[in-house]
Image (tube, rainbow, N blue to C red; front, side):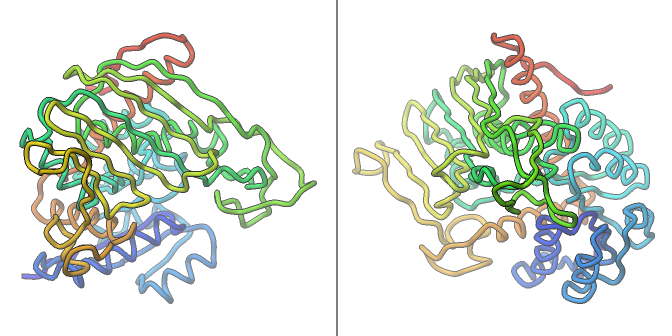
Length: 391
């Protein structure tokens, strides 16, 4: 029997639109799930986006006030794609209203805020989900199975990174992402959160870190009214403002199981465009994956294959969820397909009334590592990862 789920979206920028498309695609790609998302209401303060949501996306209603989304009686799920500084108020209100909540990362603009949001949702007993979408790449899912089965042996090394060039342009405007007072930290909570979560997913909890940071681009052109995304561009001679959070974070890490590794994130680097990647080594094999070539996995299992070195494994319908998008092997899927999988897994949990695969507790676990990194770049030494959980 098909299950209708009322969806409310707060923030209709790129990510809000991506989730809205993904919700609509679930019945097309996964009819067996019998989940029918219904786009009930969207909130955004940009009139053009409100018009787009109702005319092109099929939302039944739109508003400039996010509270109308949270309070709407026909909304079962509140999806938060608003700027980071708004997450706390929206998420806590949604929890108090008893709504299931899907929030894009970072859940909080700072680790202690993530702890507060996680506590509110846990106390309210609502189902939560987080946008750690790289977990859902079919080949990452396959590798996770190999790791869990011990096919790579005892893990020894892990190197994770997220290098993105969205901030490389020195004329890129000073959007909210570059301001501590609006975004909180820079890459620490923005893209390092993905790096930490993937490390947790594949290897396990991190015990301690030593970290460094740097702001590579210290001044940026001020945005024009009505603009200000991290892809907008100013002109030479435009008035500028100061970047108040960090462009780069790098850390040495020790995992609780003894694995050693490195984690890096950078938004101003030249070269990698969206290189969310990792290498993992064990006593019986190794693997490497990079989102820029997300439909390929480099795999080294010398006890299972005759090749004494890495072999290239191409994604295909033999791997989780892939066949719901394209049949056969070697036919690629893309970024928004991962969002469809992510939203499917979350709504499946909502329908079943159970905990989702990725929750605010996972976001808090990543935030605890980020907090240790921030303490380390101030202290200049190793810092233990400590609990921020509010009891």
